[in-house]
Image (cartoon, rainbow, N blue to C red; front, side):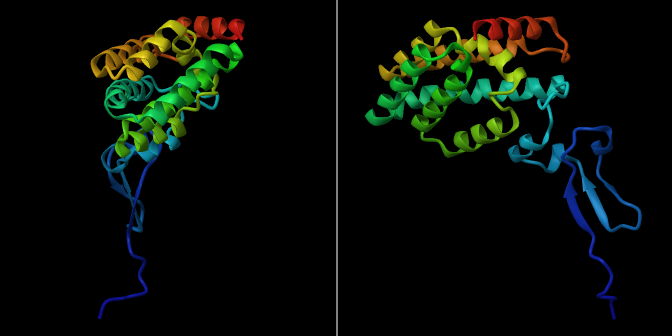
Length: 209
């Protein structure tokens, strides 16, 4: 008869991008199996992978997130131009005016809010969940985020072009405008936390605020 008192092995994803998570394994005694987070995890793990909070960002992780942001954001802008109802377009225009006319220091946060409305207008639940995970992992108020996204948020002409394309119901133009904007943070992403490009952008963003 089997010993029902014996602990049942449990599998848990390792949510730290370290050498300890490089391959699946079984802990001493066989009680817990640690799985490779890259194989078993989902987008929800982005909130648990530290690349802000004062820690040096992992370059591959940061690049991966910005590439996802670029791809999903460009298509979300396209879908928003195709699908957004008039009330969403009105909210999007209001968000743009608030960004343009508000405190320059708050521009990155207002820019993130504007993208919330673009995602809403896309009417795609997968994009919404992905965007939620991106925000959970990359706080737009973090100094690194401000440095990366400030170059997008403060280009009011480019943001205006995005909003105008969506409001005009021009999907291709909206996708192109979104790609132009979202490529900037990716181009600025550092290979390490002390990259001069980010330091300079951060200084410019602070001075602008």
